[in-house]
Image 1 (cartoon, rainbow, N blue to C red):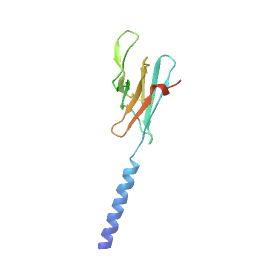
Image 2: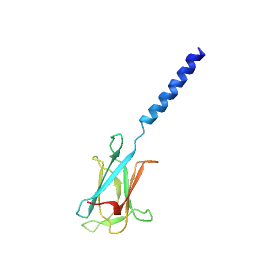
Image 3: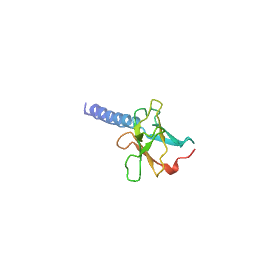
Image 4: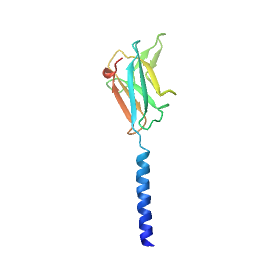
Length: 118
């Protein structure tokens, strides 16, 4: 009986370990310059799951959210959530910036604005 119980505990432990590893996914985000003074970022996870609704923001060197003026002169902060296609498009800032794709603790990706090309 003791041997059966030991084997059962070992099997449950291995099952828990393998299941927790299967649930892990790495955040992925890439951004590109559209050539029209806008930047589009696409996000997702290594397991293929969507990034719709994930927080994203554009910050300056002091990690403060950057605001820009749109075509109508309205000031808008460059932060929001990935849309249903896991994309976020924003007006390209005229000063140094970085994009932060934040899917929670341990699941953030930072992209320096200098690395974003067409």
